[in-house]
Every structure is written in structure tokens, then in C-alpha cells.
Length: 151
Image (cartoon, rainbow, N blue to C red; front, side, top):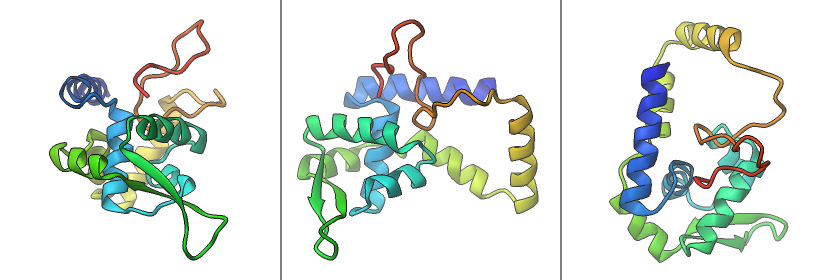
């Protein structure tokens, strides 16, 4: 567990230095690169993240001019997310998000091993906090009530 947490933190620091993005932002950027036109809910599902957390990350990517929202041509009630030209250029330069690599490693496990892993993590992971941070993002700072600056 410590090795995974260490790798996630290193990747986050490296991503911030190299590309000016948090690891959570890179994760969403890469997710939209691989499947443009997803809704906010679909991105949340794909990244195993609470929709409100994804919304914050998407808003920050919009502010940076990397992501745009548009109404679906097939359903006017649906907002679709896609990368801007700048978002596409940046996504081409970035390595795969470490979260994607971890998800792929877990996906490659047998069903039995995934169930066992889930059971073991349920035993040791704190639960009942009511909040789900962005998949592997820094948690909110204690005492501030704010999310991490790394969103």
C-alpha cells in the first residue's frame, strides 16, 4: 500500500511540475482523450469517482481552456465533454495517468483475485466518511473544509 501511495504522490508532483496539472486533472484529461463526448456522470463512472468531485476537476480544466462542454446533437438535455485543441495537444504530450495504470493492473487480475482484493480493502479502508475524493487525489485539508489545491 505504501508503494502505491508513494507512486501516486510522485506522479502527482511530477505531473504538476511538467504540465501544470494535478494528477486528478490529468486523469480526467486522459479519460476524455480516450473517449470524447462523455457526460459528467460517465466520466465519474469511468474514473470511479463521485460526480461532484469530477465536476470540480472539469471546471478547473475548462478554466485552463483544456475542456469544453457542448449540448449533445442527439439529446438537448445532455452535456458532452470534449477536449479543446489545446487539451488535445497537451493530452498527446502527457504519459498515461498513474490511476489508469493502476486500474488496468487491477482489471488484469482474475475475477477471483479482484474479489479478494476488494474484500481485503474493505476490511482495512476507512468507510462511512460520506465523501469520495477524486480517484487517488489528495484529500481535503483538515480544518479548512476546502479541497486540495491539486484538484
